Length: 496
Image 1: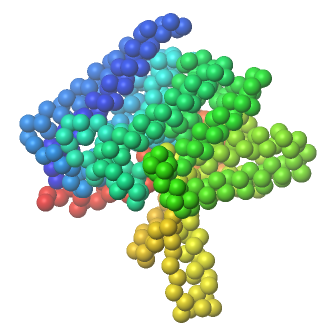
Image 2 (image 1 turned 135 degrees about the vertical axis):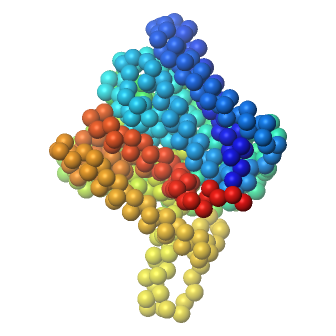
């Protein structure tokens, strides 16, 4: 294990984080509306601390190693530790600025930002300075593209081969990486990502939002993170005459950013044959449409709600949850039990592989569904040979076995995590629905859960150990389990 190489890359990653803190600090310092100097001081001090640790890691790494390639084992360690360190240092502004957070709460809020989960321990968001809220939205902007995928584009300019980093950053693992050199692909993804942010931002500004609110919501919509500078989320605009336009605009971008970003490169290259083979997108949009229709019809028929209102609420809520954004306009916790079961199912599913969304991803659901169908047919046609094909690519038995193991492990962690939350919150009167909701919301990067952590509540009332545990669960889900779990395997750390 080349620890000096790991230290060098992690140091550069922390330096990038420190620079973004400085940028948010400059906004806070010169904010003409609030002029909150305490927030600026907190961000500058956080940047100094983070930058100091970055230098301590970079200097030995430069002097002790001259490697310009990142081997696979070191890349795995960098990915896992990178998300952990960014979440830890990213919590410093919440610790150093009023109304102040505890260390566990700061880690939770920071991990929620970088993993684009959107869960929060802020009870009254408007009490926090705008500079801190901008930092909060910026963590989701960085986390959405994947800090380490963003880093690949930057590393290419300093002569470091970072292909392993790209492959191990789970959000952008795909067979289409042969479209270009890995650095070129990462750079193009970054341009597409920033382009979508700018389009969304300008649109929101044109609809009447302030530049600050438009920026924060654009950052968190494109990253499918869902953190809002308002305690009532998008419901803040419910009384506006054009609130439905704002909701439709955000719904479009939430759905768009739930699709594989590499598909956008294929579109730009006008490879329409590849576009029409994309099963992930068809399944994701199809499942969303079915759930929207069921909830709209059910609530209209059983509860007497206007079909138009029911459709509007269902459309925004379902896309927000399925994309794992977590923006809210209504309290879905008051919906019928059957509707909440559907919501829980799309929470687990999430978006497409290669998107900014969380969950176990639609592609794995497709493989599971096709494999289940084949196994059922084999009960009466045992000699028939089947081939599972997804997006035009055959899935071999080894890949299928890995997917089945992932899904099994994912559900086992959900069950075990629910039990751990129940144990940590023993004596508080927390319900099973709340415990399960906290795990679903955090491991799938959703944001809101059910009951005590539903869309009209937050995670502030949980105990400190529970918040720290859920912070780790967020990172575990964001890295799709293995990139974090592998850090606890002793063989990983042995010398070559």
